[in-house]
Length: 248
Image: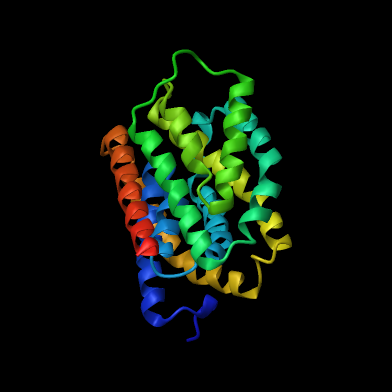
């Protein structure tokens, strides 16, 4: 079988394993799916054509989790964040689409590294954030989503406030679904969506379903705080490794 995006069989198996691991993380914690998969993909191929596949997977995963998360969504916060993201999505994706393969891999790795370090810093907000603050963070997330990692700024923002694990997970899932729905038409307009995207989505869905099911079953079994920190440490190490490879 011919794989999309000129992937070899070895690359295809590697990306399937990366997708399964990322889907488990999303099912468990509500964030990290795109960032984990994109940084792993960047180690072996150009991640830009894969971002629309990832976004489509992220939207599909919400269908698996919708009933579970509905009572816990902070809709006021999610809508304000999405309003900010809408402002930044078009220019950010238009710029990212014009980068070469190595430039894109370096830009994505540096962005993931910077945001992961913010998450690891333990940064906390001194007082509750209002609508304008949510709009601003949403705009930053819109910029980051051009690299497929729009969830990281919002994860850092929510982690810095007293948000329960269930609300964190549910609000992140709704926000990521909305921001991905915004991004896909813009990516299509910039030539990042085509027939191979659909093939990639169809190949990804069985792996995705299995991973999200496995991750959702473990949501209540392990400390969410410790798990999220482990995910961010992994992102930091992978980003550093990718930057070192590109600089060599």
